[in-house]
Image (cartoon, rainbow, N blue to C red; front, side):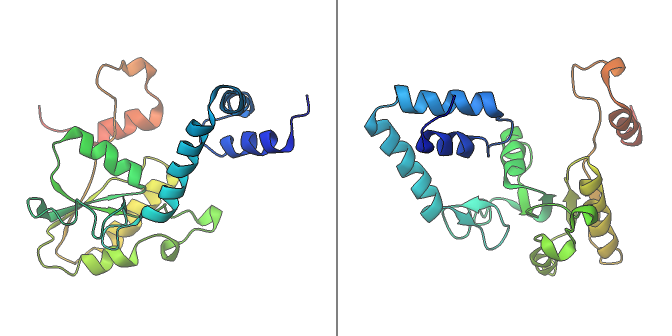
Length: 199
């Protein structure tokens, strides 16, 4: 069936979200058109406009924020001796939900991927190096993803920090709590074995 142009454009907009295929996008678009009132649509449009005008990257850590600096960077109670390096802002949200880490963060805005033409200069690395000139920072915790790109990025950062006097660690990757070994893939199992510690 051929949809009106505006509905087709809306459908294509929904498809830009991760995990949203054609059928889901179609369902979202039709629901928006047939079930939402004009006020609800205006509310959604307003939310998108506020994101465009009010949300920006923290000039210190690169996290998304609506204040300068972000609430984490300006929190004096945080441990200023540790920085967790992550690929995306969403990773900070996950870390903060644990409520067990109270140090600083740095968002790379991606990962090194030579096959995709993404080099060290294309991610938020230079500002990290600038931050690490601060004598207060004693440890950098690499929390990039367990992917080829994430591993390449972690290795690159570790290499450039060699001899700096900063303790570089990597978060452990392994089998999640409650999971059975038989369902773990080779990479996960290998990382779990590498990250073993005294019991």
